[in-house]
Length: 143
Length: 413
Ligand SMILES: Cc1ncc(COP(=O)(O)O)c(C=O)c1O
Image 1: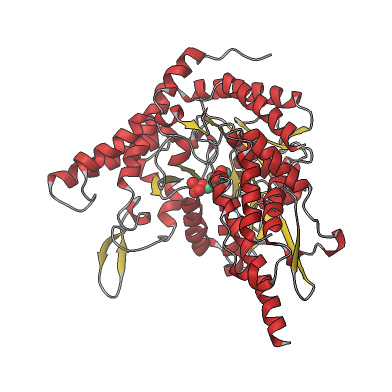
Image 2: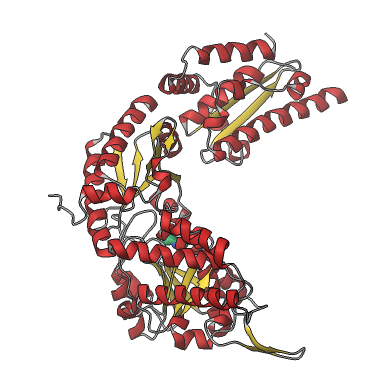
């Protein structure tokens, strides 16, 4: 699936809940519980994303073709948000990830409900994911 | 048992109408504003006083011979007298207008430090201080080679008085403590602490940011050497606050900032500074803020701070009882004497998540470290959820909050 398809899938999922905020957040929390976690012993401080009130770790892997992300947080809603973004960006080529423009965050009405600290964290997360992809891109270009 | 308060619920409904923002809906729910520790809402009389100033009185103070300038100078100086009376200071020139509590503490750390501190001196603060009452002293320590000493607290969040007395030594140059903890709600025994320090000849600064909205403060009775607070936590405008200082100290201290307004005469060789209070008020001040603060003080006094204290105590007890009923909730800060501030954590729920879901239900609380990171480290927690009340909050709102919290926990588990 390309980004737009995955994004549409997420948007449709959230639309099912209508204005029912409890259900939306329940879904987000469930997503958080399904987040691909970083193994505990690899969860070092250098993986922390700055600008979050909660702790948020991000780790990426590159198999030569596709990038995969894992994350963790001490706050479950943060985990849920990270899970959504990973669901969209993971398993794509570095080039695709660097080019990606994410739309779904606005469409599911997530951003307007995030506190500024959380919205900052979200921006920092996406930025770090793209930076990781960029690093893989330049590495594979050199080879 | 809950004590029936002098402010009846019926009165509160009336007072609430004085605060336009309290009728707002947040996320389609009536706003429940429990973040008064961060800043309080403003009654219409304060908003009106500020607009009236800009619409009818605006001119610069202490400068002009023209009528407008003279009128506003008088009004601004009346505001100073109002603050003096409110704190029961001996003289109005002991009241310095600042940007707020943070600015006031910086002023003292800078000017007092410059005058009296030398290498090896000590500054004594408590473990529950706000960053605003830590960092200015830390900076001074770095500059002058001094040492910051910290009074430990008990598990319930009270200052350990024996440890405090032991830490008061011949090296201690100043004691700087908070009257009320913004995180734990503890009301510190500042009068005793001041007496104790004075027996050893050590002056004391009290950070009154969280005390002034909840308690009647009498600086002469406390015998505080410096006392500071922010107008915005007392139903007044942001950007203005107060430093009270005893005349004997303020006269001795060098100015903090310099520029227009602080001088008697200037030539290129030397400047002679103005007498108090202008020596410490460089530049054009927040005139509208001073006028708004005076209106806020009038407003609070018309209700009566003693009535407010009693009523808020009743709110605090109710909130404490309601929170204790909820499984997994742990109250942080169980001092004997507390102002209407209640911090808590919830088993295996991050404070940020709790705050986010409470907000969805129209409830404004603060989450995080509350600018007391050293205290959080001491307690071994990443942060708390804090509900802080004002006299316009109600028992009903606390009940709505308790139910919303239960729902939040159900969702997060
Ligand atoms: C105890 C205490 N001291 C100082 C401050 C700083 O006040 P301001 O930001 O108004 O300068 C606060 C505000 O949160 C406080 O709670």
